Length: 348
Image (cartoon, rainbow, N blue to C red; front, side):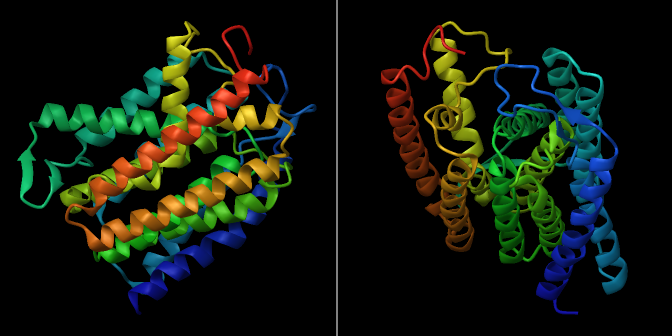
């Protein structure tokens, strides 16, 4: 079967099961109650929709591989196993609650495990000809840090209907295309299945009828981070493509943490200081905030795909340019929030 059709099939095999499984998850009775000031809902909402995303994506990959008799990269099994661990950590938090430090330590252990198992780049490459081999300890540490940052960034950005998972679906589709660009079709298939699972979930999430939960956010973040590492492992010269694809998550979270540290706020405590939360406090509706972020994610994904196609110095140039644009936009939104009393040293 044509490889492109395999990827399309993986997407299709995940979408409908995800929609159906989301309804099953709702019946489980796991809810996200508005127990913290940072939460936007006024009443308990069914959560743990990530279970539907994970199961539908896994079934799609298995069915697609079986139907097409295609091979499968064992490194992707490692990513899946690690993401399953992240899902279980998040599910425990959804059901019984976990202290933030415990979640961080567990996700860190998962990140180290994925990297030690081989999902890590062996070369640090700015572009072809500017490459240096990395010692194993540095590759493991850097890869684990990447997983922890992306997984938590995905979780932190899950604060408006359709926001985080909408951006994740766009990024996953971008990874699928990048996999096709480098000829890694099992990689593209996996990303396509994740895209399908996310799209099925969004049918319920955009309207606020089901949340992804920590289980889903950590799972999706771990898969996206793992896909990024695997892409760079296979093509070291594309080092800056994953950060480009995931920049809508990374820029908001990291710049917000810098701002909170500068103003003496606790970094491990829940808050409403993200730029998207400022927009919500300003009166914008969930769909408006999510739509703007989706457009931004679509732009970074297009740039990421073009960077993978053109390669050479293009990825690093585009990454630096997008970081500058993201920083400018973030500072502009935050300045407006401060001026209007929506964010500040003493404001939650």
